[in-house]
Image (tube, rainbow, N blue to C red; front, top):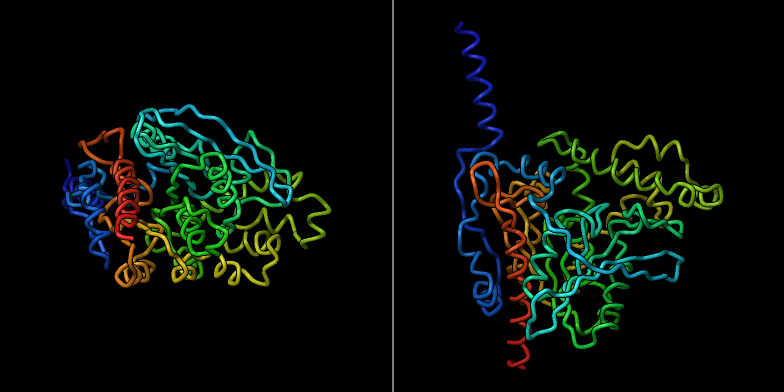
Length: 398
């Protein structure tokens, strides 16, 4: 065997080891929290935060691998929870649906987890189903918003789909849950884009929010779309590649419903050019050609500022927990500085940062084959319990 061939193999192995980041070790999550009482509740109900997060040894220390596996595979041995689909007609003519899942085990408290999935996702997304099943087994009712346009089986009935900052759909689901279950307390949970929507919803007009909403949890969001899109447009850390995938997912939804969204009347009304929409290779290009026009924004920058949860932080009144992975290839560390500062200056707020996990991955255990339940799933279920406990403590204190 030639020296050159052995050298090539050695180089390939070194590159793989670097990509897989196998030299890393499991680390405990870092927690930023000003409120000692809130932190105590969090640690008491979610002791997992005091323990190292242990990803699969071979590939779990790579944020890229975690992210790609999450987007392609989702979860291993994923259950299919049984629920009912609720249809709602909104004031703008949109047909909103959400899936409702009842608890599988009895619990003394009536708790409903209102879930907002990531971009272009729905109740049929694998990672959502896994979390819902685990929450059901722990005695929680779950409701999952289906982003308008995301379900192939539900046609759009108005001239819009979901977007990054439109919280009215989530608010309508929460209000409907409040009407159905008057005695239930509601915890809002959002993943990625859904995390941004949940946070923005919690910071918007408090008078329109049911008092049954006791807190929220946000996972893997970027907080600031204005700055975030600048980072995603760079090729560094393959962010431009991830942006392309997200763009294609959103574009496919628009084109799937083009008979409604891109009718001649709609194109004339909003000055839409279908060729520009089809040709868009990035979300900013797609938002310039479609989203900002449909939502009547003068520029994409105005759309992004309106959409970003960062600008609604100061109006949040209820307890909030934020989670991000440090190796998330979609969210650079620069975007995480504001949430760290916020968590260390506000009561009833905690920010949890995990060294590994990628974007919504957080696979756990094993060498090659991970556990069926992820670190994120079991941590979220515990965090819901901590928010419930915090509300109980608050009642006693008052």
